[in-house]
Length: 154
Image: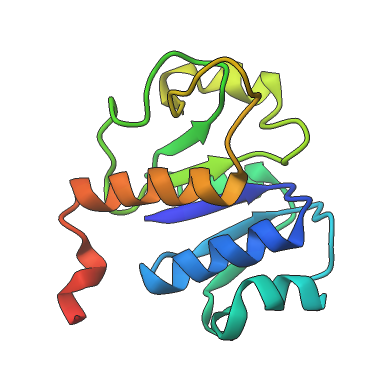
């Protein structure tokens, strides 16, 4: 499993997601531009003493990332679909992508990948859940479907 943050803006969210990635043996892919420096203390603070253990891959573009993994599925988390994150089947080498906190994944990317758009159900009062919470919710469902492969070395 892989987590992708497309143009992340908030270092605390990236740090929290990095911590979840370490503890589930999940690579973290960051697609530029980033809204912060990876050297910032906020990202390290949010990731606590796990940040140096995160398997981080930096990509210049989403197209570059997809070209490197042509056989993988890329699921896109969005509030603009009715397909729930629990309605799809995740493979061990799939990617779960999240957009920038302030605007989400661009419409044209969602439109081009309609069948792989997923959402977390919630009441209509708010725009969306926190990015790091959303990543953890969907990542753990994907891991559950694959019998928690990181748990083999418990």
